[in-house]
View 1 (spheres, one colour):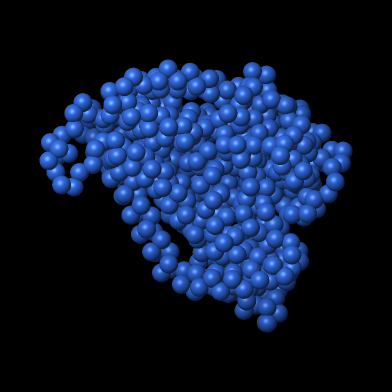
View 2 (cartoon, rainbow, N blue to C red):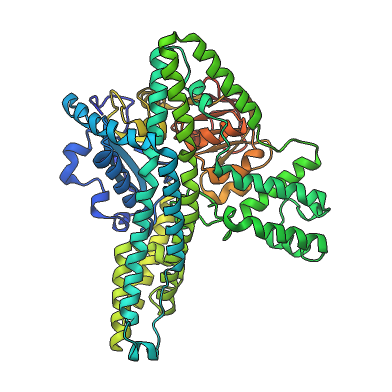
Length: 613
């Protein structure tokens, strides 16, 4: 993307950001190539970088960097090397005080864009023409990958190998099996990310082509109306919450709803239910729902501590309590899918009627294609980010537990404070000294490193990153950057203007409606349980995994996100007003503050003070 020279009110240089006190040496947690290095200052300082708070809202633990490298390797491979998306190659990232900033690599040469367009039309066209068949095969691949992950064994290191190793013909020692298992675990993660992005870019591409056609032929059409014409589809990702609503109705129908009291833990609720026949019958029904629907994550899946509902049932149980309370009060808990469907058809009919006969056919074709491919934009998250990744993190925990049993770590969870390369190094020494009977250095080497890094992450978490760094771009052209993150040319210039603060935040109008209410600022997944009925959720971004709390809130405001971000999609599906991509909502708004959210014009007004800094 083209950039302008730095000017007053623009974003700070990434090379001028100071390290928070007590956080010196934070760089050791990250690969050398992930840092703003003086050796490439001349190019990096002239670029525009924005904080990817949608995927990485808090400082990144050392091991979790694998969920930056692998996805960006995958998205670049598909976008740049396979489909050759004409205006965009891939995404570069840099780490600042533990936070992740990204910048797209644009294609600006018209001849190169034309060359890439030939590849894109041929290859994307094949996918669009065979979408259902190819997507069916994709789902089968993902299910097979999840099975392989579950079957991957992390061997222990026995005092003596079993007879099978001594006498068997097809045999390997634990030394080989353990190192192979770790390498395979990493490769399975890479394979998942390769699958993840195969269809996703095309889903955005189809929608982007439809949006571009609409804007060219209907100049006054709002982005929100374009999105609403595609919305209202009951995708697989909403099934877990639908099952929770069904269980809530079942609890009332079978007379066990009194167990679901605000503030009770899942364990306390289960203990009461297990004492009656009706309660036990309800628990049996819950067990049937858990596979696969409790493979949801508590967050976006990209951090190791985003556990599945199976590991941490606090979110589904909080949702059950809320649904039961609403039903007891005579409220409606269903998503307004029929209303959304009617509205999308009304908009499609009315905008279609405004077009001439020549334009109406491509309008209908592009709309039909968008509706065909769009469910994947959300559904892939269930298979990849939730079902696979929550189990993958647990597989890595098995290696951490092994290292802890041998004293290399104080706690198996500390494995995530080491990089994937450091874990490989620790495993190398572990099997070496196990094999030889030598004395390992690891128990003295790794525990203090892990302890120091946990302290660093806690301190870095107190720092508020600026929404962007570097030079304000003249134009943003990457379609994924625009649709997913909402980083448009207009939005970036608005962020630059808003650096000085103010009582009105501007963002993208993501879901229509106007409400006032008390804000609840949520900066990490462990704060989701604090959300109360009738509050307005203010966060870096949301994930579809948070869907159960959308029956409790009145509206949503995010720092980052476009009309095709998950926050925007979920809010439209639940009929809630939403403003996304404000750049600084979590920094400017405090919990309890009264705010007005206008999801129709994309503004958020702070009604009782300027908010916290």
